[in-house]
Amino acid sequence: MQKTPFAPRYTGVNHLAMATEDMDATVLFWRDLLGMRLIAGLGHEGYRQYFFAISDVDMVAFFEWPGVEPLPEKDHGVPVRGPYVFDHVSLGVADEDALWDVRDRLEGAGVWVSELVDHGFIRSVYTFDPNGIALEFSCYVPGVDLRAHPRMTDTAPSVRTMQGPDPVPGAWHLKGAPTPCDQRMVYPGEGHDLMHRKKNMWETGND
Image (cartoon, rainbow, N blue to C red; front, side):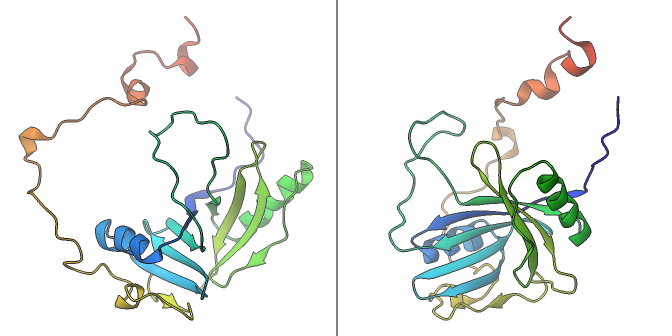
């Protein structure tokens, strides 16, 4: 197999960016129910963007814009018709050299790509995939660690936001008890055959 000349060391999904009209409800869910630290908040009256830590390297972000309406509920992966979109996907790369590698490769292929943008804690370039999906590639700024030192610069933070970056004990009054081990059922999903089919088509072909 021919080795690809371009193999950047991706670190995962830097952040997923979505939109909400109610940042308090979003903070209540992502920070207080799911247990993700709110590590950055920026904005002003009528506009906010907050980041929650998914892991040591991954985040989910929300813009708050007036007039945003929740999407209709839809089962995962079921096709839909008509407009259906979220803001963008940011893919993490190891460092600024890797970011330049990505930019140079996109530009060399004739794909539109932005200049490098410094956001203070991450540096990014922007482009679009063939499906029109907005993509961002990001690396962290050396010496800036929002997980160790969270910051909130929103000039009009919500009341719940001002409770701090950490999950608030007692914010949710959970009902019931943990599911007993002997009742923990796991059902096969769409990817179940990936590990349980005997044939790996890359190894065996269509035989």
